[in-house]
Image (cartoon, rainbow, N blue to C red; front, side, top):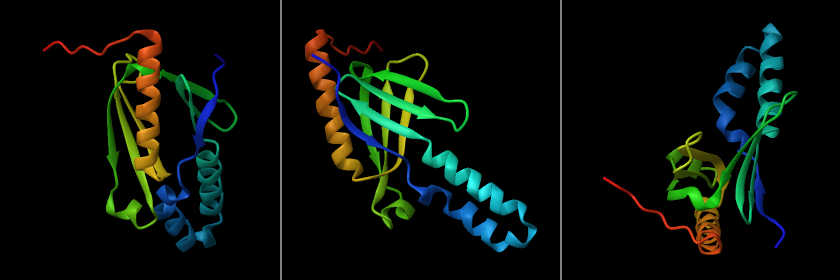
Amino acid sequence: MPEETVWKGNPSQITNLGLYLLCLLTCWLIVPIFIALWKWIETKCFVYELTSERLKITRGVFSKRTDVLELYRVKDLVVERPFFLRLFSRGNVVLDTSDKSSPRVVIQAVPKPQALSDTIRNQVEVQRQAKHVREVDFE
């Protein structure tokens, strides 16, 4: 079965609001305009892609880096909705994983974080059943 994209998104520009306000207040220096523009481009190039098998996180403007997380490695999901992000109907989805390179993955400032969390959970269960994987914790 071919891998297909289930969800794709970017973090909200709301995460840079403080920087944008600071740059607006000091725009007479000219340099802050370029800093704000760079941050906007950087955030726009940050892409989360949830496929039927993996979560791919791509970042970078000129040089791209893609981190791939196999969904069957997800151990726990947490939805964080801080007050500031709730004002804009956004939230974070935090994934605790058994992956060595990225034990904690945060999908930042996305719309409808609870729905995304449910989608990820469903895809994790499908992948665990397809690969016959069980999560076992030793303590």
